[in-house]
Image (cartoon, rainbow, N blue to C red; front, side):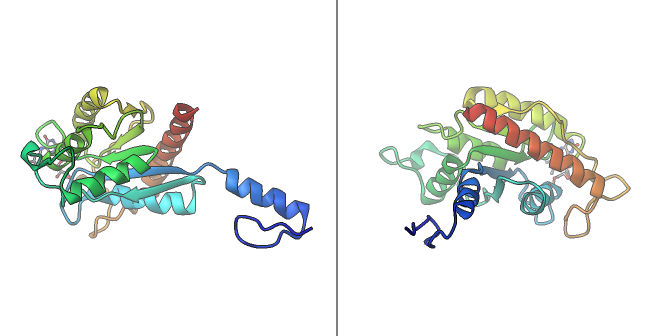
Length: 211
Ligand SMILES: Cc1cc2nc3c(=O)[nH]c(=O)nc-3n(C[C@H](O)[C@H](O)[C@H](O)COP(=O)(O)O)c2cc1C
């Protein structure tokens, strides 16, 4: 007897059924990637683009989506009406809610995270807190980003975000040899390899947390 599978085709053999089941059971981790810089040629956004490419080509079971935060209004609770938020905020919150984990690419602005990133974190923290229980990782294109990452982790304590500790990831993008091209795209192979390790670590931790 022929059976319609989820792809809408008739199964022709038990082997194909087994293969189909294997494909459906493969976990797909959805990662929401947020960049703290609004700059067009941002190195940090370049790291996110590289993460998207790597997951498409080399890392199974992970889908990274870039989430825009430049459209979010500056947080003002006067903009909240009967527990609802401005349209851009609702869209942003929904995208984070649908993700299993978050990847933050954060520059260092005066030893901390940037205003747009803090704004996004704060909008997400309004009730109900949409960050709660998610795994997270932070990357920075500048060495000073380490300090920003510490602030990010501190904020994550209250937001109930669970950051991976290793591997740490930060670069010195402004120092030679150049790791990015003029468009801000990551071109350095060794750095791509490090980024890959970071994403695999985030995937592993996300799955552990979900267990
Ligand atoms: C307001 C401001 C403050 C900054 N403060 C620091 C800092 O404290 N330490 C540091 O290493 N870089 C600092 N920088 C440099 C940025 O982190 C650096 O230019 C980074 O590449 C910006 O990220 P992007 O390339 O993704 O835009 C600062 C830049 C700005 C605009």
